[in-house]
Every structure is written in structure tokens, then in C-alpha cells.
Amino acid sequence: MRRLITLFTAVILSIVSIAQDRITGHNFATRSEVIAQNGMAATSHPLATQVALDILKAGGSAVDAAIAANAVLGLMEPTGCGIGGDLFAILWDAKSQKLHGLNASGRSPKNMSLEYLKEKGYKKIPSYGPLPVTVPGAVDGWFELHSKFGKLPMDKILQPAIAYARGGFPVTELIAYYLERSGRILGQYPNFKETYMPNGKMPAKGKIFKNPDLANTYQKIAKGGRDAFYKGDIAKTIAKYIQEQGGFLTYDDIASHKSEWVNPVSANYRGYDVWELPPNGQGIAALQILNILEGFDIASMGFGSAEYLHHFIEAKKLAYEDRAHHYADMQVENVPLDRLISKDYAAERRELLNPNRAARSYEPGSMDTPSTIYLTVADKDGNMVSLIQSNYRGMGSGMTPWGLGFVLQDRGEGFNLEEGYLNTYAPGKRPFHTIIPGFITKNGKPYISFGVMGGGMQPQGHVQIVVNMIDFGMNLQEAGDAPRVQHIGSSEPTGEKMTDGGTVLLETGFDWEVIRALIGKGHKIQWDLGGFGGYQAIMWDEKNGVYYGASESRKDGQAAGW
Image (cartoon, rainbow, N blue to C red):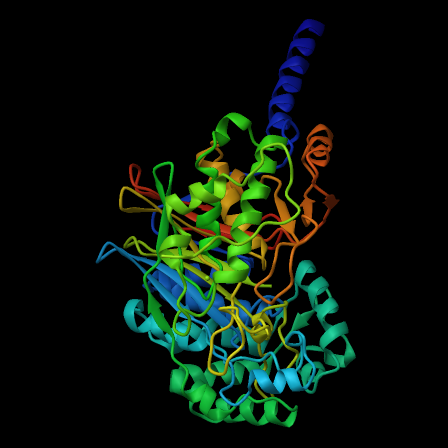
């Protein structure tokens, strides 16, 4: 009997050990991917994911579900998005077997000039208040996507968000944390407290929060379409509010807004085509980094090694110098897009990378020949949408027009006020943008719709996901859960220069020997508990006819299918 007990105990301990190995045997914890046949949604909030699934089950397309989820997130995660902000999307259309790109970013006021900003002594456009406010493009983006790829009527798509806005929803711990931080900064601006701070406080974890003003705004959009936002009372209210605060945005600026359908651009990385949108966003920085890294045997270096991290950081520095000098609104400036993402140019830049030493600065390449939510949805017909939407700086400018229930973005801060740059401020121009959706195809067929939200982290995050999967053999969920690195301090499109090599931020999970080796190569290392983005992804498995979903453990994210 004792022998049987001993044997039973050994078996149990063996099982426990195996179970523990899956978590504690690695430098990071992970969980299983979600697998489903009929559709998949991955967003940064479980309730938004459930709304997306409900729309899919009701016969809606991937675009219908994405819009519904985005509207819910604008209510429940105003610290990252809202209809006062902009939107970008990459969509795989199963019918045409083609990728489509949408740039739904807004432009600067037509009557605010660079001369005015200089006369007032501004070295950069302020982060908050009326001056950084640009036209909000998200709602027009919804209707552009819906007109081409929607199936259900917009009133049905927006109904879940309207119901939650009127009836209320429980605030999550993470969002409560960011709301409290935002309130400290933005509470000074007119109508912010009235909208987001009932009883003078930001809602705490578990509190039921309602936003009846936003419900009314959504209701007007559902009934009147995009013109209800851009040519009706909403536009008039926005313009009047901004001008009362000393800003320049006008009704005409808002009424004349139009999104742009663009062709996504790609770089092939070891047989996989990675797709991004062209500037005014920063997506091609990810392609530039991948092109540089492709010339090295990354797989042999090993995940988390000092050698890999060093090569990644230096490739990022090289790409971001170009980002600072050559990325801008392509409707206004002549951006040398083809050269920036070419393999020949990557080879030139690669020669500058010292495998043993961190560079304090790089020059941009010669061009002779410039806070956020992410979600992805896939439907039973094979359509996949990669969508990212943001106010910038979390809750945006603080400008909260009376009776509308949302904050306006502060994307104008992304302009450079020095003359001679492609991203220099001009009236009616789209600023440099950080938010980027990603997509991967294999042999001309859809493979992965993905994104990593989070300012300047985004191209770095895209690259780390791709490398984790292709070079290091991780699955869709592991690739997102693996510890990340972020380099900060590169030259910025707003004019700041890198002169000291910047700083490397590391999540926990990297060995001390690796950190010591990076310091030995000249890198400045700093621990950071946040700022590494938020990841969502969906992968299509053509062989088995199923979708895989992955979500972000750093946020409230959920991937779910049916």
C-alpha cells in the first residue's frame, strides 16, 4: 500500500512538474491560443470582444464587428481611443483576394499657421489644450469601411455601445488606473470633469460608469450617418467649443474632411510578406527594421540573447532616424517610400551597424534618386480586418465639447515646428502618426492580422512579434507574451534629436548576464513596468480551416471565437 502511495505521489509530482514547466520553466508565462471555425475577435476589452462576436453571429461582417467593438471601446476605454480621434485599417477582402488600406486621419486647421506658432514662441505644439486638436477622422473611417465591406445597418452595429453608454458598465482595474492619471492632467479643461468625473472623481475599479452624452452622439450617428458628425450639430459644437478655448478648428475644417483609401506596402521577411500602411503613419519603420535584420542569422542568436537584442536595437535606431526626417503626409510631401523600404537601401544601412558597440547617434539615410487601442476581427467568409484607433496621449487633448461625451485628439503635437522637414507644420496637413495596423500574408494568401498599440513602441512591437514567430518559432500567443524591449530616445519627427544613444527599456524576463552584456556594448538599460504596448492577433490556418486568436496579457484583452 505504501509503495502504491509513493508511486501515486511520484506520478502527481511528475504531472505538477510538467504543468509548472509550461509556466515557470520559461522567462515568461503564456496561455493557449483560442481556436474557432466561424469567426474570431481579439480586442483590448472582454466586453468589446463579446459585442464583436454578437455582431458576427447576427450575420455581420468582420468590418461590422470591428466598428461595433471600436464604438464600445470608445466608451469603455476612453484612455486609449474614441471618436474624437483617428483610425487606420488594413483589410483582407476574401471576395477580391486583396488587401485594402484606409487612412482615416484628420488634418490641421486651415487658418492656423506656422508663423502664428513661431510668433507665440512655441518650440513644439503643446500636448494639451486647443492647439494640438486636428479633425477627428474615426467616424468617417467607420463609414468608409462600412460602405465597402459592411452588411448590417449602422444602427444595429452601434446599438450595443449605445445601450452600454446609457445603462452603464463596470470599469476595469487597468482602465481605472489610467482614468485616474488622466483626470489629474485633463480635469482643468472645460467639461472634462462633467463628462468623466461624476462626484468629482474618476470612476474606480468595479464602479458602474455611464456616459449618456456619448449615447446621444452615437444615436445621432446611427440615425444620420457620417454627415451627422461632420456636417451637423456635432461639428458645429466641436468648432464652437474649440474657438471658445482659443483654438483654430472650424466647422469648415470638419465638414471638408475625407478619408483616403491607400495601397498597403510590404517587405518580404524570410518568405513572409509583412504589410503596413504608407506614411503619414510610422508603419514602414517596422519594414525597414525587418529588412535590416534579414541580413543577419537572427535564429541562431536565440531569443533574449544580448546579440539579438543589440542587433534589434541598432536596426531600430537606424530606421527611426529616417522616421524623423522622411515620414510625412504623402498628400502634401514627396516621401521617398520605395527607397525607404527597398532591400538595397537596407543593405546600405546595415553596413553602419557595429555588432559590438551601441551607436550614440546615426544620420538619416540619403534619399537621392522622408495611447491607442488595437483590435482585429475575422468572419466566416474569410474577411479579416486589422484596425487601430486612438486619441493620442491616452485621453487626448482634454478638449471635451459640451454635451458630446468624448475628448478630442491632440495629434497636432506630432508636427515639427522647424522648417525644412517633411513633417513641418502646415495648414490642412495630416501630422505624423504613431498608430499602425499590421498584416502578414504567405504566398499571396492571408495569414496573420495583428497589431501592437503604444506610441513609438508600435513598429518595435510589430518587429518583435514577426521575429518571435518566424525566427524563434513561437506560436501566436507566445509571440505576444514574450518579454519585450523598447528603445527610446531616437530622433523624433517633432524635432528632438538623439545624441546619447538613447535608453533601452526591458521587461522582466531577460537574464542578468544578457543585461550585463548589453551594458558592455554601450547600451543604457532601464527597467520599465509599462509602455510595452498591447497586442492582439488572428491567424488563419488554411489547412484546417480554423482561426487562431491571441490577446494581450498586459491589458484587459480577450480573444474569443465561435
